[in-house]
Length: 563
Ligand code: SF4
Ligand code: SF4
Ligand code: SF4
Ligand code: FES
Image 1 (tube, rainbow, N blue to C red):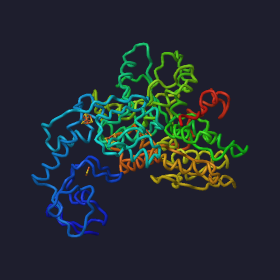
Image 2 (image 1 turned 90 degrees about the horizontal axis):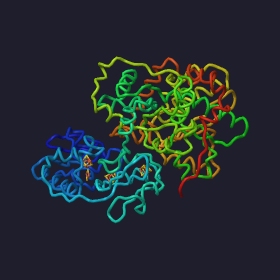
Image 3 (image 1 turned 120 degrees about the horizontal axis):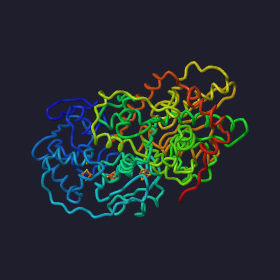
Image 4 (image 1 turned 90 degrees about the vertical axis):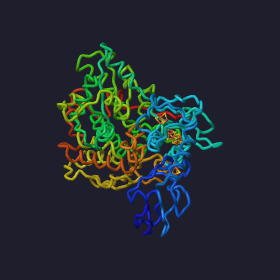
């Protein structure tokens, strides 16, 4: 431990702490812009100036030493911070009123905190990049913090962004869609301002609700359940799901379903696909296919390894195909009138829904994808007191789910859900303890060996594309020891998806993971094959996993992209 004095308070902090961390431990939050709790120190905004032993220095970049004396507040310090912030603001557009980050922007907060009222302003004029269906880049708002570059290059290993000639840009200044970007949206989560944001499409939802000829239905992804509370200003995981359904109906949705339903269905299809590959010598390891950022990644960087992917569509797309076929038929509704909206933790889902092959119903299977952040904005248009709302049930036929589907939202959840079902199918025995703790947690890589009636099955779980790359390099080298691998594009899984509420720090992602497993533990049914509506779907319509109808509606093919 190291002893430092901060604003006259003596405190012992761990060695290696920055002055900013030590000040926080002593109760003083220092203003900052470029620093981020999960990323490297950049030391480029200079709005965290403090007095260290009589000299003005940046608190994020200085490491504590013993007997250091720090002051975080004086007229001289505030003036230095204001001066540095005004330099950033001098080229920043004053667009707060029509900015996607309005009221959730670190620069806006900082200007308010530091009492900036007047400054000279000649904003940069840079056209917006709207080349992908998922993200919008407005580099006139960039503060050059470089957080996005680190996330894209070091964590996701995609390399779509770079620092060149003193600015942050896409590689070679291309449009985002022309780079290898997989539209994961992790850069948007890291960005302190509105320079990279989700492609907002709330207006399309409002237009659909206003159209009397449209029947507007929705599906909510597993990872939305816990994070949506944050988007409406409540603690993580605290929004009662049945009140959430009531809120969605108030917004104008005619039917509210759950992607959890097709998450359970995915387990039946994917579990049987794995068994078939094990029994018939099919391509192994088989890798999960529900994360569209991951699909973009393997299609871009490992196009000759696509046969390792499960042919299952993602739960979002399975739902979209079933809603406009099976459900429409059951309800006697013309599928042309159905406007299918999914609420997702993910920006890559917007890209996935727009893929030309995702139309096995004869229509675009999912018409619109809204992120959790966009849904939060819709809810704030007509603020709802969820406590006072009468609960409403999910609609039937595509609305029932088990705890196995709930955990799809966390890294390792798909693997655990699959093991719960595959174990019972293979052994014919009841799995008494359904908790595969080895699959859980935030670590980037997890592995296990499961005994299935004498057959040892080696499984691995990877989250973030950097870890997916390691898995793929082993497969390419022929050294992968696994039979089944779960890959999720985003750190922590979908709870850390690019469309989730900001902040999405590691601490926040861990809270969401805890909330997910707490929900699973409280579910009366916790194995996908026990889902009563999934059982009925097979009896009534699909007949068997991997059967003809499943292949038509629930499975797909992958294609090499770019490069
Ligand atoms: S990025 Fe922040 S400061 Fe800039 S226009 Fe948007 S809300 Fe305002
Ligand atoms: S969306 Fe993902 S891949 Fe694309 S630039 Fe951002 S971090 Fe990189
Ligand atoms: S785009 Fe955002 S995250 Fe990237 S450097 Fe600019 S301000 Fe920072
Ligand atoms: S927060 Fe310290 S230099 Fe940016």
